[in-house]
Length: 335
Image (tube, rainbow, N blue to C red; front, side):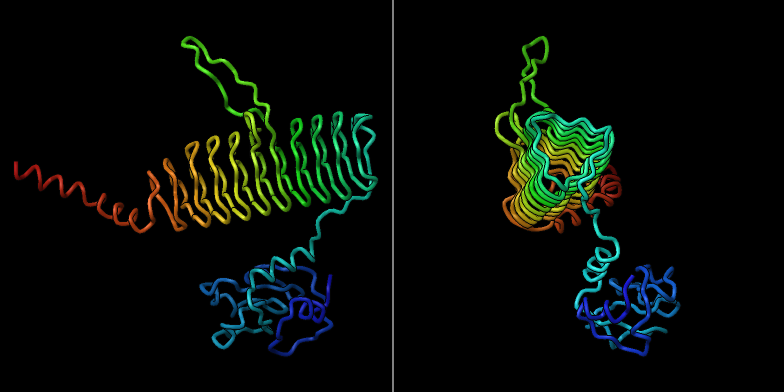
């Protein structure tokens, strides 16, 4: 817990209203549910009506909106309330810190190299030749297969599988049940059956990546599947073999990216986007939910629909499609 004075100083905010600066703040809550010892925030102006009824000790608001807002409690003016909310949540709920605890029911190869302050929970299997660097936490039931390298201050939640020879950079978070380095979907058709092609590449995860629960990232067939720095993957995402995802991209749940596609930097994808194989997606593209990408996208912008096209074009086509039954009736009437 922290005093209001500490919080205002930490976020470099400007306090408006009378309040006890020594008041202890125990957490952050929504405007509707906050109590008198909690902080709240207003990041979306459409919720400003909720300010009137809040019981929060103080509310984070945008400095640009300050003169438009009325509230029964003090306001803390900041540049970006949502970003400050995220920063404070990290302060109230810091990530688990490794203590060097290794559970007796963990199975660790004699040839693995484990830093002294790594935590390894019950049921983990750490195979030969693995390296796990300082400050990392390996939760219950994880498999770290032979030759895997895990960087500093990583957090693997329960049941994560990292298959042979894959690499994780520093500060990587992998949520429960994710599989990194499963075989890619590689087969050759003989005319009578599918012949499996051994998948001998790796998955390389760069620093500050987060991978959602039950997400799967296939190893490369020959080269590597690569997830660059700062990428955020939601739950139930599938990344196929030899895909490359550019830095600082964010990909929502149930997206599927087919093999050998290259996604540029800073791309954003809504839920259930599907991307065909061997394509290039330009930097800075935004793909709306359920967009189907079947050809290269060469320019940044917002794309939607199937096949994916510039969003405004898709809106026009969607509007016309709703009128097709009436148009058809007119056409039939002229026959």
